[in-house]
Image 1: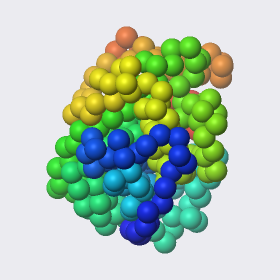
Image 2: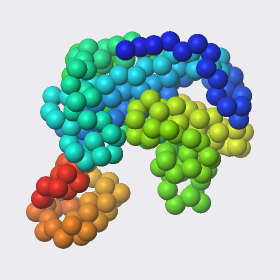
Image 3: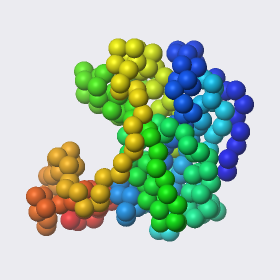
Image 4: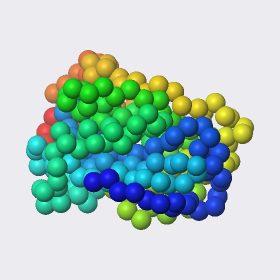
Length: 253
C-alpha cells in the first residue's frame, strides 16, 4: 500500500533543503527471511521520499513469502507468519515499489544488501532495476572510525536518534534518513565526496566469501561447538550466507 504524507518535517538538526538540491532522494529498508538474495525472500519494504527537504510520500508493505518465516527472523523483526498471511505476493508488490522509486537516488544503511534483494526480485519478474545510491554505512566507516560498531542501532544511539521500532522496514528507513541528515550536518563540508551517489552494483553470487563473512562463520562454528563440513577457502558469498543462516536457525553445517 502506498500512502501520501504531506509535509512531514524532520527535527531541525540539518537543513534538508540542502539534501533536496542533490536530487530526488528515497530512503529505504527491507526485512528478509535471511541474508542471501538468491535463497531468501523479502517480507517487508519501507521507504520514504524527500522532496524540497520534506518527507512527502512513504511506502510500507508486507510481502507474503513462499516459505514460512524462520523463528530467528521473527525474533529479530517481530514479523510473524500471521502478519504476512494476507499480504500480497512479490509479483504484485515489487512492481509497485519500482514505480514508487521512479529515478530517485536510493539511500540505505548497507544499501547494497537491500538493493540486491529488490534487484534480483525485479529481474525474476522481468523488470530491470538500475539506480545510483548512497550508503550511510560507508559514510559512517569513514567518519566514525572511533566507534566499535557502525550498525544502524549503534549509530542512532550515538546521535540520540529515536527509532521506535528497530528492525521494521519503514522505521529503519526513517532512522536512516535522520542519520544521513545528522552525519551530513557534521561531515559533508569536510568530506563532500562520501556523500555523493554512485552506481549500485550487485556482487556476483559466485564471488568468494569475504573475510568478514568467514570470520563470523568460523566464530559461530566455534561458539556452537560444530565440526564444519566445508572448506573455507572455496566458499562463495552465497554459500557462506546459507551456512550462517543454517547455524543461526539451529541447523548443523
